[in-house]
Image (cartoon, rainbow, N blue to C red; front, side):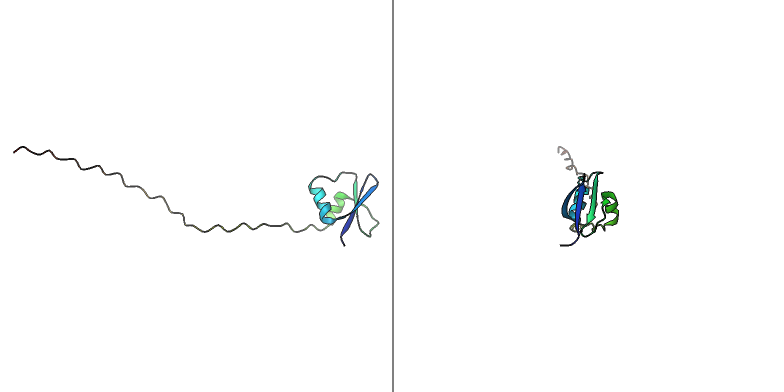
Length: 94
């Protein structure tokens, strides 16, 4: 496995971790000011904040939203006023 990273906290070494795990630790706020990181095979320890500026960040995953069906919005139709029943005419007496 490549791209492994070791974490040193208070002079105690932990790891190896994948770079994705270290980025997740940072995202969750688990890294502290006393944390140093080194890549596997390297002898140089870097403060985690400096290491984060050097490591290439993964591309953010963009979730595609499903396309909503295109529906043409129609303007509400004005209702015609209700017609009153015609008034009955009174019959004339003959």
